[in-house]
Image (cartoon, rainbow, N blue to C red; front, side):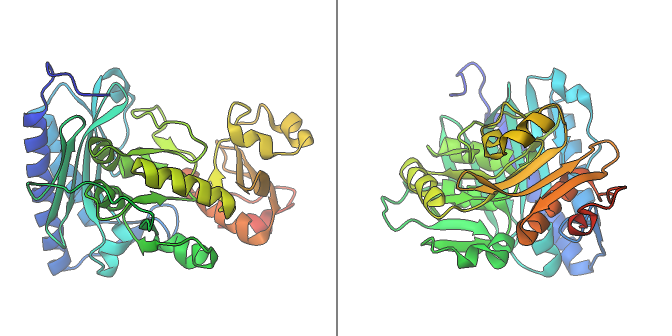
Length: 356
């Protein structure tokens, strides 16, 4: 989608850039002063006062500048009111909180604007390295005000991957060109700026992780989608993309898609339904038994299930937990991040395997 000329975004871009830099300065102040790390759902899901303070700063600035727009931030209570807006700002005040808290420079401020569910403007600021990535679909991408170079021609593609996913299992996959790092928003920004060529994840992500980086990538001629090939709409009632992702410039994306299939790199799919392509990996008896269940999650690769987790989304009670122990542990972590701590099955079947 190209932004219509009747809807210029120069002011929106300038405001987002200013707020990203202000938030970055605030984060550097927190780093100098020190802070306490808390956890929302698990040790894999940290949060700090800096996240909350930066969120307040950004949302206040956006609301003052664009009072008619909707707002969504990882660190604020969600409101269904945003669903009534064509234009919605989607914010992650710190993408890469774990890196921020550990002293790594691999974190960023992420501010994206979506129009009718499409990412059209993205600003990603890396405070530790003072890099400001900014772009509008149809108008290109800049890094600190300079137009970024074109993407690499290949074939030696640079694949930015999750450092946690690399440490746990990707290090054993013979996929060339992998470079582990933290923030996915920063990965997407670096791909848009031709500093990398592609990325993917095995675990799900949320809209605030992706919106700004997705807009930047589209502005640079690349794309981000689900690993099953389907697009990612934004401003959804539940702002989570419930499966692994893949992104990059066209030639690199095509190569990576084929390489992931060749190496049977796993991916999770949460909230699985019969309408999802991954439903086909379940055996026929499970397809029949679970077709109306709202809490089916699977980790799969090469057309077969590696782990299955069935959870009541309301009570978070585990009803089934089956599969390879390693993959079941990975899937359980993903579901815990999405729903919160899980409750053991009353019958006890599989409950030990399903503990977070």
